[in-house]
Image 1 (spheres, helix red, strand yellow):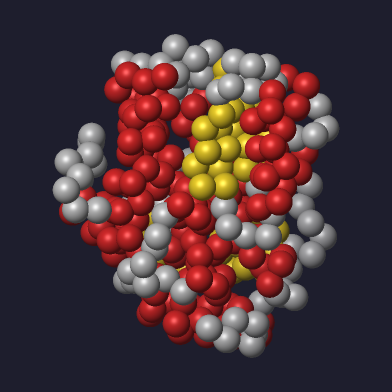
Image 2: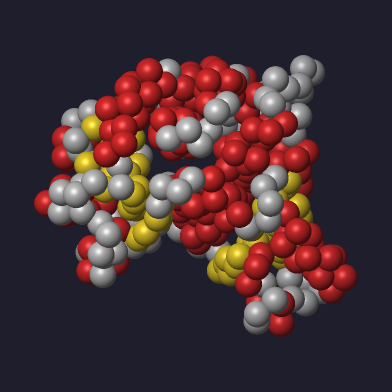
Length: 336
């Protein structure tokens, strides 16, 4: 992507270093997968808000590629109504950017009391989150997809369910520079969207498969929490059941496409909204080259690609709406 000017609020050196720090955790994560071995009965991805949504793709990966049960759940609800299968032999996985989310930290202690092995990814070794875990992996990355991919595919490889693990893990090291290119390619579309919709009052965000978690995260944790925009998030498979009745010619509709087997669900939504709506924007991971990545691995990387592209949208919305992404009225401001 040579010749493209520097991106707004994008430190390329810092961005690549953060992702590289995540990829560098490979030896430790592989050692943990070997240590856990055949003793793993099931894997639970427990979080809150964005940390829950970010782990959805990896529960889905287990559900669709392995006989090892995988479940993503909201931690606070799970503690009140847990699966009967959770306990000895369970691995409970957590992620946290700050390490200070009470709902998540309570769930770690609860999971340990139930006999589960707790594994987590964060950036702060001194946080309550890091201190509570049985196994903690530290990096400067602000997302945890690379680490979660290494953990889950490592477990699959140990079970004989992912023969291409070594090649896949090697190619993950290419992502820091590849995702810089994604950010640069996505920036123009993100800028156009933000400028066109600086005064929008209501948006639809639609996704499916392993990018549904990011669609959920983006609508809740960015558009609502960070920009105070009224947002409907809907899974493409459920769009037919009520949501389509709200589509009008001027309804702002944002479609997040991945590359897994659920693309036909998104195609169905797109065919409908293109017919009845004049304000449709598509971010599709298939539009980004990802040179050096095996075509058979592209679908696994869709959450990383869509997240990188959408991060440019966040930056431009912050600018044109004059609303900083770190401003809150209630979250962590007042008692809840």
